[in-house]
Image (cartoon, rainbow, N blue to C red; front, side, top):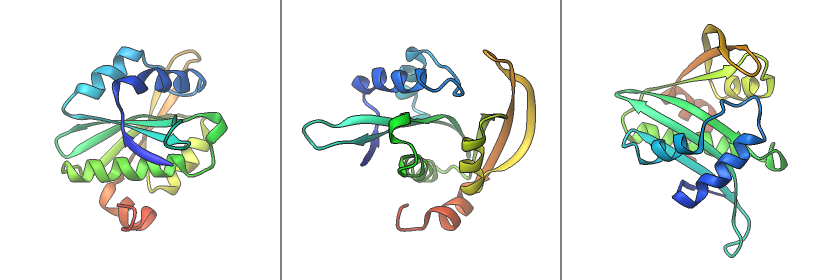
Length: 162
């Protein structure tokens, strides 16, 4: 497994992974392209396979504003879940955000997405509030969570990974 910065030719794979995850915020492919070239954005991909035939199997999209950042989307292809890819993407994203001077990361997650909620809670994210009817197709509340990434890096990910 390799975590690396997203490249233009990864966008189709990111979009394909997103389309298989109905609980995820559904972005257009152009949205990822714009974030990829936004100086405040960071899009990372998880890649598995050998050097001759690597495959993008997950992604994480971040955007920072001053000392805070938002985890905009994170998804793993269903065939590769529960293998540590989400953990690796979040860890790499935390490191990138820390290097940019970010102290706190926010995210929104569907209230019904119990696997994601458990993952984020285990990583140190805490519930801040609920945004009623935030998501569409289907209409659902969003839970807004946040984490001090100084605490997340030492407590949940270990210094060796950061």
